[in-house]
Amino acid sequence: MIKNVFTILFQRREFFLGLTLEHLGIAGLAILFSSLLGLFLGLLISEYGRLARVVTGASNIIYTIPSISLLGFLLPVTGIGNTTAVIALTVYGLLPVIGNTYTGMKNIDPDVAEAAKGMGTSRWQMLWKIKLPLALPVIISGMRTMVVMTIALGGIASFIGAGGLGVAIYRGITTNNMAMTVAGSLLIAVIAVVLDSGIHLIEKIIPWKRSIK
Image 1 (cartoon, rainbow, N blue to C red):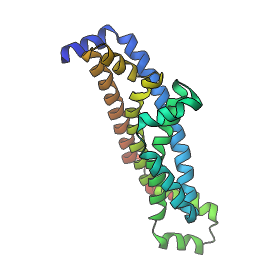
Image 2 (image 1 turned 90 degrees about the vertical axis):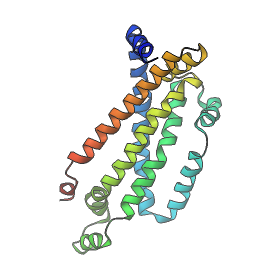
Image 3 (image 1 turned 60 degrees about the horizontal axis):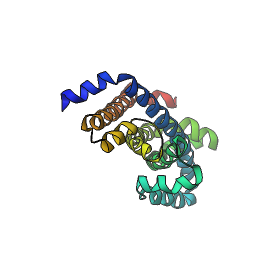
Image 4 (image 1 turned 45 degrees about the vertical axis):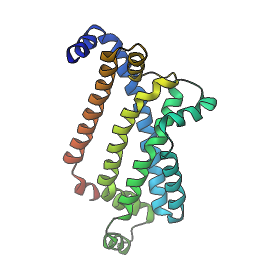
């Protein structure tokens, strides 16, 4: 089986390269939108606590919906193709970013905030120069989870007519070609591991403490 997988990857390398780039494009857009929207909502509910229960509750409810069902719900609105896949992946990626942003902001040492207030720091400066840099490691951890999850879930996009490596998996299943199915799955796993390792490296090399000076 392993030999067959590497054989098909080599023989159809252009096919798999195209699918890999398409997969990265779809997942990349979803990761970008999830990061921006999730960070915004996380900061919002950390500053306005009354919204926390509503936002986190809504994201938790959405997260319980099976991914294939969410794609089905979106089809009548956005149709088949990459747009629906990006929207669904974005929605699924919000929870870890919102949750970690909120947690990171709320777990900041109150003494630090009080000291900053005593120095005349405005609310805006407090948020961007004190709280956000201190919460950044926790936020990055949530984004790391979201990235891996988005890459993996991108494999189901082919079921609603989108591209990506899910096409190889779906084609392998429908044609009983196990080597193609495994090849598509393997490439998704490799991408996820590489990106996860890259973000983990960033977590290690960025001097977090310096960012609040």
